[in-house]
Image (tube, rainbow, N blue to C red; front, side, top):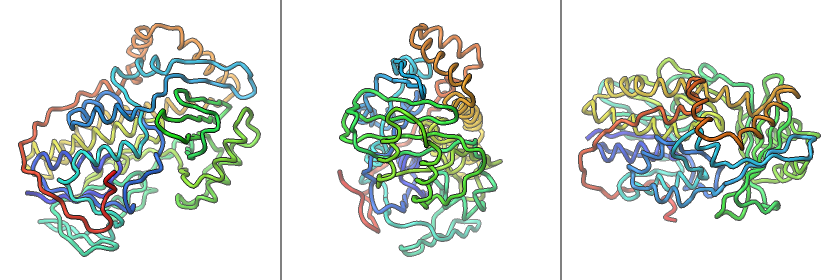
Length: 421
């Protein structure tokens, strides 16, 4: 039985751990956070292949029960009083035949719960060093005792610690698309339940929404900058300063949303970046999800891609009989077209969401108005004529990796245990 260390317990990590266990491997997940995050995160989309996989995991009902409940989109063009209403279901039917929008941290909780009691989760710790040889990987941790594993997988996001330790500095592989994203947890003063409101301006967009089962709301900010922004990804004060500068002077309720974001304790800010790597494997170490092939947060379907990537990685390792060289190679070959299409989709989505001129902004508003009245079948046909990029997720066929049955083993934990809730 091969012992596999997975760094990261957000989305890709728990999915990978679940399927590795089903295929007879012995996974351990290490997570820097002290336990399950309970801030709710931001809303993420699961499209058809990811939905098929969570159904295989037996947690589809839980995912659907946590659907955000967003049914309507209201688009407000900055400086224009008359809003445009759009049925969200029409948008999603044009993109994918199977879809759910859930809060990211709630999704992570469901995915971790799928293998609770079977997989070892180590919280409040992180990998300090990795040393490979022909037979395995020696790992030291910031808190725990050193251990040896057969394989190591970085599922630790865009700013992956594993990637830094094994492949080198992030700047070698990161390709910013020229846009930035911020998300803040704020009070639901607008009383939102089934609606997301967008305020669109030239090179900037604000969205505010809530999930039907949440008492608070999320304010999301997308914007372009003329040059590269100088900040550290852990310097929240500087990030909030940049956000205020980027959205100064925008109308409607935006000043109030900015003020609430400045006070928010749950705040996320980052440059929307694509990861471009010739390979996401080196020896006995590989990367999955945003750590290896992020198409761009909020615009590229990265959550669905992470779930698919984790499922395929576990399946190909099993199909290769544990031969990591063959399994890693086959995983990359299987995922590469999906990754490439996701990058193209992200670039196109960023252009649409952040119009670069008043004319482009007007066209964006008019196309949204037309979208509400054109039959969905026409929209699907238009997507096919344009190369099908809008339906890239449905184009991926989920492989069938039938796992052999295993006997569940109760895991031990070092560091604080996961929240049982």
